[in-house]
Image (tube, rainbow, N blue to C red):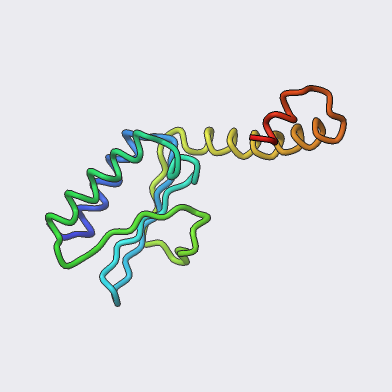
Length: 129
């Protein structure tokens, strides 16, 4: 099995295990880098199940394909993917992504309103932390 087929199979398993993510994949032929973008970035940065899966995948990949590398990024990293070779979405990706987007937008509005009007002490403590 070549590295592309291996990664497509493993990334398909990843979205089955963690169904609330989107995976975009690209291969940099010049440097032999496989780039995997995970969205939403909250999962990439904070989800322990994802972190464990990413670690296992990286270790297994580097054992099997010693002359190639794999890089995981999120949508807000400095490295950007212009033309993915394929995109995979978990069954819950759209729903969770929409909720996170809505919550993030409205949470900022709520915090701003509370800071301006200072209706409760908890908002002041949250900003101090």
